[in-house]
Amino acid sequence: MPPTPDYLDPKVLATVRGLELQARLVVEGYLSGLHRSPYHGFAVEFAQHREYVPGDDIRHIDWKVFGRTERFYLKQYQLETNLICWLLVDASQSMAYGSGPLRKYQYAGMAAAALAYLIVQQSDAVGLATFDGQVRHVLRPAGQVSHLREVIRRLEQGPGEPRTSLGRTLHELAERITRRGLVLLFSDLFDDVPEVLAGLRHLAYKGHEVVVFQVLDPAELEFPYTDATLFRGLEREPELLTDPRGLRAGYLREFTAFLDELTRGCRGLGIDRVPLRTDGRLGAALGHYLARRMGR
Image (cartoon, rainbow, N blue to C red):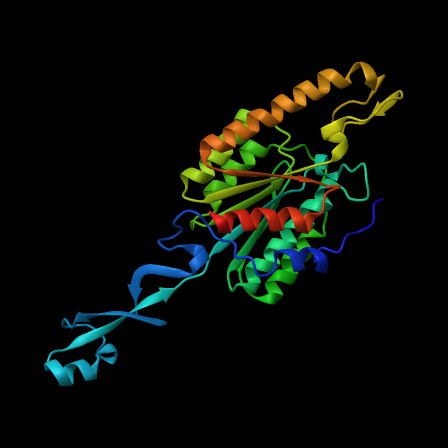
């Protein structure tokens, strides 16, 4: 069994710490990465005055202005608001695969934990949903360090047994996540592509900004096998003993078409698809993506 990873790898955190996770879209009426709402309330930072009307709270009257004008004006403030970020982590059996030191699920868990840490550090709220054939666990968003530890604990429970039904699960989560926010999906996306894209479209339609981190093993990308190999299906698929040399060209052609269809579909929905290889440096991959987001 591969070694259990440090889900808060200091090298990973050192790479992403200090980079703001900024949403491109207006979320809940504010630029979430900037933490400033255009809606005016009575909190935090002065924005402007407005004239008093009966029923207003007199505690917010600016008496200095009254002394100059002999008219009542209220101080209005900009409301500080927090980003709501959901981590959706695929815990299906296909994520248990790994040809190297880390399984896909472990790598996805490390990526999710690193971003959860960053989100909490910048005083935002993070929620978690893990799923396989159905939604397994849901943690409502919060921003406390104790909540971060609970997120890590849930991630450490590992993948389940059932087959993925990713498209259907995304539809369910789109209905369950009511407040608009940033949704980060960690999955190999092994499902029918039109169904996956339909689920992603549902999340985007609900007003979320969606980012897909597609976690893949190098063996899935390169199909390096040369000798007779027994392939074991992880999601109730049958075993197959075959000479992989005769399959390699067809496999790579189909896998490339799968990735191309996903890439085009995500681009058409305005969704970032971030490829992650389990043999790659996670800190560098996350840092590069976050820096590119900040540059936009």
